[in-house]
Image (tube, rainbow, N blue to C red):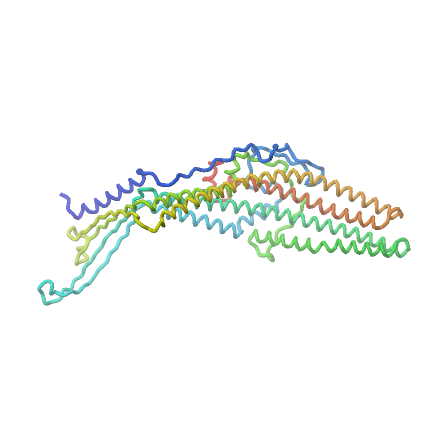
Length: 505
């Protein structure tokens, strides 16, 4: 025959077990179920399609680039530029960049919040033990002597909120989506960092090339100035020619400080990317001729772009979170069922605390239905719906921006190739023109202002060619970034991140 003392805990355990079972097999969660938006139905990125390759010219960095459709991207795409210095710098930045470290910490925080949220699926249990010494009057018991006694107690209390309408499940779903958002925010930080370093390295190489070109022009102008000085002394040139050449040389030298300052700032930017102070940064110099221009450019299928772009995946996670929050707000308007119970003992002596006669227990169930909150719950649900609509609009805008980024870079690469070819032709013509005018001036067949104009044209063409070559490198890096950067092939991130994403590609 069962006694009251042992039937109470058993009933409590049975009740909690039944409630837990009901959680996992019963009922659906209120609110809309999230469905990932479909990828845009697009056949390409550029109206009219892409050519097979860009224009090309036989100079360093002028070769034609081939567009390869449906080609996958490598995770370490920056190695295609063939620069050991660049590879080492990016490896250093991936290890020491503080922004990246912050994104990693944010992901860990989101994962821990998700793990904590899953604890809501289970009953909450707490134990307590205590002793109370009390003195009371004996008058109530017909005695003139006070009563002094000790009461020892021990109990286990269990409470459980039955997730009848899925509010807890929706809250955990929202936490999972937030962790997903942080995961892809981290991937976006990786991609942004690597692309920024490549761009900064190319900019540094461009500035060094512009400085070298300007110094070569200045050296040529000094040589010309010496010639004019000798001619003035011999009476073969006027002082006006001398002053004009001095002015031209001074103008060329005046452009150097701005270029050198820009170069120093670019080095400081690279130091920041690698987590170094400017005075401690000691990476090697970058030169345009040391960079290899990738000849084959991957062009992912448009249907895969939304799965490859970390920013698109991050905004999809935000949309998922906002959708789940609609379910949370809806659940808050519905009844909340809570089960609770306790089992323990009370005795005057601690040794008797766990005896059958000292057993005490209780079971309770409560249903709470909000009746009047001044419209608070209704408007919170409407706000959650509006937030989901906002997230959907932001997701769509991000997708449109992603396709525009790819289209822009593909068009820019074609224009860059034509620009390099045109600038190379202009530089060659300017160099030939300068040599011809200098020869004519030496023979007295040309006036000196013609020499100055030819020198200015040579300087402008040389610098323009350097800028055009550098822009081609920068836009190549921008294409890899616009296509997602191949993060799904990397092994230097959290394995959980890669595992969760490979199935979507």
